[in-house]
Image (cartoon, rainbow, N blue to C red; front, top):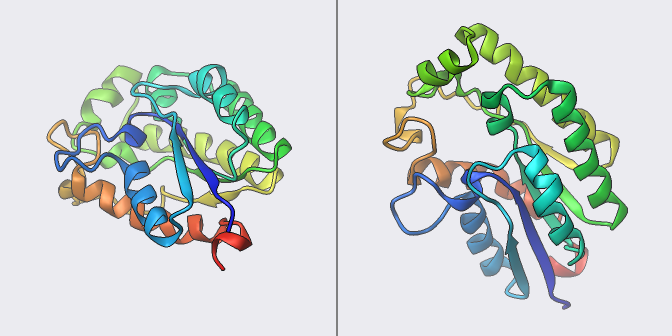
Length: 206
């Protein structure tokens, strides 16, 4: 069985901001499962706190493609959303990521954005955007449409995190009311794991 590389591209959720159990974010938790499933797997976690889709294109993607990972996860857009990046600009960045990974044969799992209008801290970032909850959800759906379009266009897998209800689930969030808690990261990794396994090279599941 040949070794293969898992590369993670994204923002602070890939780093583990908000977790207090010392196990990192969803990337570390996915990799723990992956290592137990396939010991030959290695990890290149390029996620960075505060990263936008532009940062992924400029800083993370070149490092990932230079290593030609067999597997990748792409979870970015929340910072774009909060900073008021236009959906069209976000779409251009996501398209570049999706195209580049497909070109080198990387099997990628793209994640839509969760409905953070129900996060405890939602009142602060809705004020920052100058929109109400319903408008914030509409904007999130516009971003998610772009994510889905790029993923499907280039044959990548798609995890729809928007459909996971976060209403009345304060335990999903850390004390800052925005980033996931350790429990939230556990749930996120558990949600993504089946789709990640489906992308493993055949020899890695033998």
